[in-house]
Length: 265
Picture 1: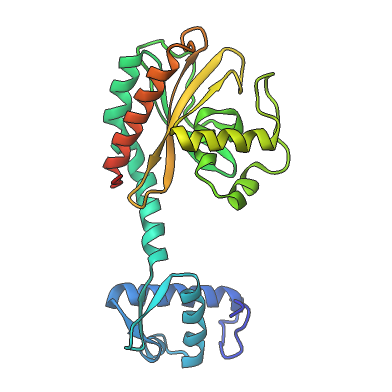
Picture 2: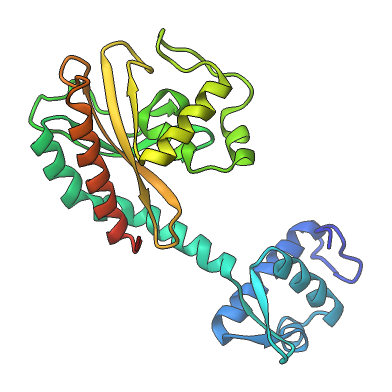
């Protein structure tokens, strides 16, 4: 059903029909949440609208996975999409709390800055931070949004996307920030493939000169990558011979947070 298909809906005078359709669809979900399941006729009676209206709304919700039909009973219940969205919301809300006891000690152990980042519109947004010692970092990255292709966290998050979502996230051109920034889409795709295989990413002076970082994925209870944990510091301390150790530390810490979010390998 097109959301504007509201022939038998009588909207309030000051309310566009499309908005009322959305409102009624949400009411359908609330009814199913309260009662566990319900038939089209039952829902229509509860809302006081025509059965055909509810039938069309339920058909759209079913097509998107928000509701599912109970086998051989002609009734509906909430679908897996609701569970997935709820899980994603809780994972994000719980991320800071569940990572605090892991990110702090890790930062102290390695003597560098530890950040957790999420992906938002093709950019890596840092949501939490822990410093190795007072004064170890001259600035905070919390709240900062960085181009994903130029950061270790961002590349970990991009590596979790399928081709369609990756194209949407990075667009058709990649901005260069330093001589080391990946500016070619094919080169980026190749590196993302390497990241998937080894399980971690690194960025050496790709966002700014003198800054190097490694990162690993954090997964939720569904196995989806919901965040990335990074260890960053000045390049002179993040030397090539130190990266394997730091990357292993990042992977272990990210895995520990993933377990707290309900992930089981």
